[in-house]
Image 1 (cartoon, one colour):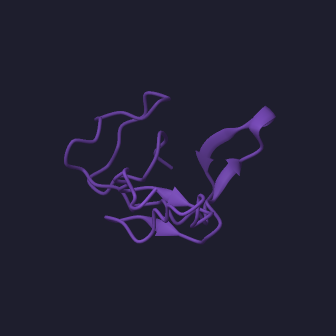
Image 2: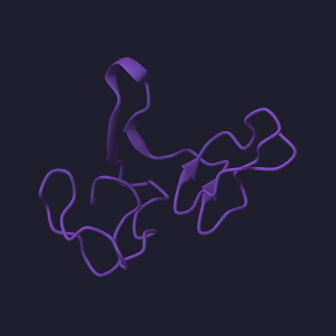
Image 3: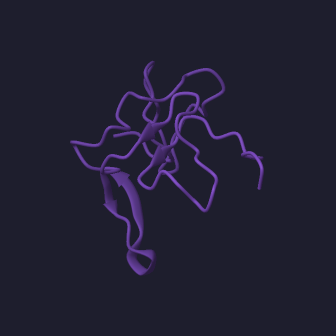
Length: 85
């Protein structure tokens, strides 16, 4: 591809190149760090955040759902991802 056809924002990205596409930097992405998810293995994936996750308080309240996937309310500085820590 001559350029990146995808716009990625507010994402945790542990690998910074996919072929010739580099999603970092992007709008509010956190790149080349440990994601801080409970388990990133495909067979036992768990997207809940550990206490050291860089996704904590890194989200954007504008357009974010009021509750996370577990039904817990998000605060005024939401975490990135499906779950609020």
